[in-house]
Image 1 (tube, rainbow, N blue to C red):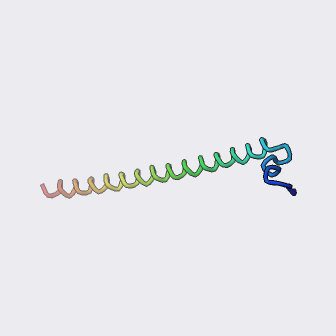
Image 2 (image 1 turned 135 degrees about the vertical axis):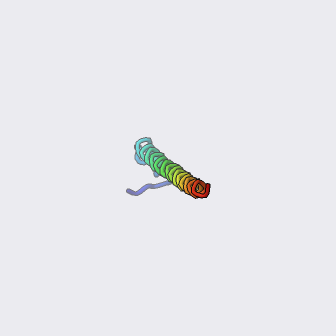
Image 3 (image 1 turned 60 degrees about the vertical axis):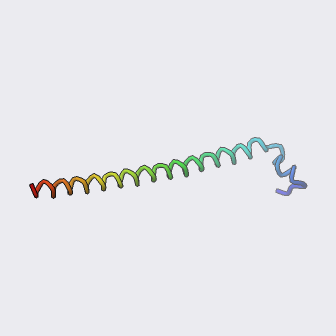
Length: 68
């Protein structure tokens, strides 16, 4: 499709609200997926770190228990 001017491009032949609305909704959805994935990754890494620290404390407690 050929546009005569930039304003014609933005108007999208009278369908601007549909076209730009679809782009906006798609962008928001993709950002939501990205941010929720990053947040989930952060929580999973924190959980793994906490579990590893807990296991280390348990092992240290067992060693201390064996020395008594």
